[in-house]
Length: 168
Image 1 (spheres, helix red, strand yellow):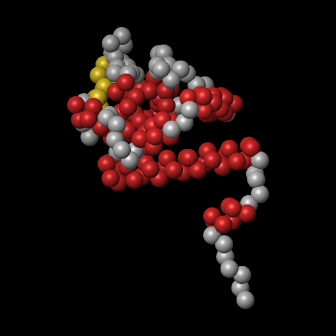
Image 2 (spheres, helix red, strand yellow):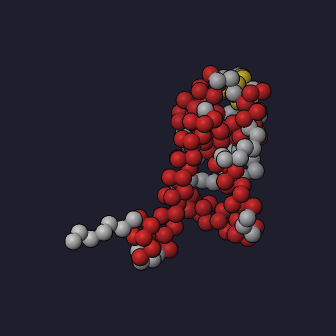
Image 3 (cartoon, one colour):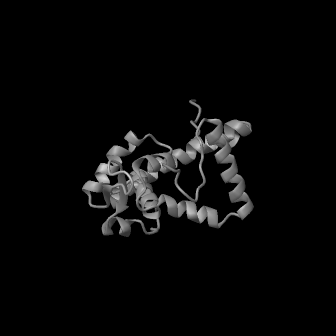
């Protein structure tokens, strides 16, 4: 008789504890996987990916932000944003204007259509994050933010204040 194959859920139930570091990494990978799936669902249903929506949110909160500031805020290289910004601009959601101090640098802003997509919407990644944060005590949110900040810094990513984009 061939042994019955267990489902991943039952395998997980009998798996020994991985230890704090591996368990934390496993959860981070699960969140990353969830973000990727949610982004694909958003692209299919709303025509905009999670990253594109995040870009609209940041630009909406910091009108006139430069591409370099946006890239630093999102912890990506400016060249990574080129395609995202081009797609948002072609769709009439984002505009680039010459910078106020240096006309060679673009200042980003939202169009009226972009501002409409900058609103909170149920079923999005940020809605899930808001729901989780609203259901946690402030001390736990603070501890989670501290742990994620320390991990990012340990991995070589400098984390700036969440209240403002990095300076030019």
